[in-house]
Amino acid sequence: MSATFWLVFATFVGLVLAYKFGAPEFGPGAWLTFGRLRPIHTNDTFYGWPASPSSGPRTTSRHAAAAHAFSARTLALHWILNAYWEPLTFQIPASPAGYGHWRRCVDTSREPPQDICLGIEVPTVESAVLTVEARSYIVLLSNAPRV
Image 1 (cartoon, rainbow, N blue to C red):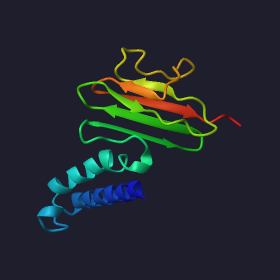
Image 2 (image 1 turned 30 degrees about the vertical axis):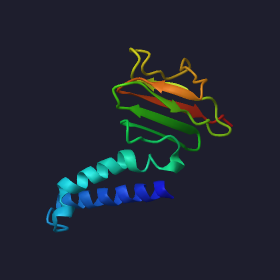
Image 3 (image 1 turned 120 degrees about the horizontal axis):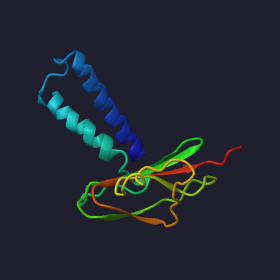
Image 4 (image 1 turned 90 degrees about the vertical axis):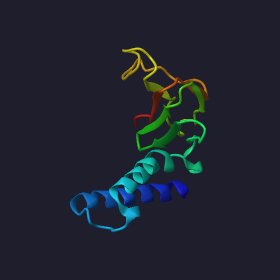
């Protein structure tokens, strides 16, 4: 419920911002200026709705980090962002029922060409805990079996 509220709120603020591009005088007052609404929209989009208790691992007030998992009909995705200056450890949720193991397709802490792996040679994540290096992000994918 909380994630839905913050997602709808961020979308509403984004719509007000989009409207203000065409009509800057819309919404008089100090709290409805572009300079005040833009940070609200940006921070809520990146930290508000992914950080709710219903969405798994979340941001912390102590570290600049975020994680979020979601799945669609044939693909599950879990991304982790570590903007902190030290490595952080994250709990990896189990892949959705009927999907394969998590596969690390993007890890910006690795040297190219191992930083982005797509195709057959994508490494599997066997552990439920993953350390994300400082100032990097990881994208994990899991595919549903083909029918």
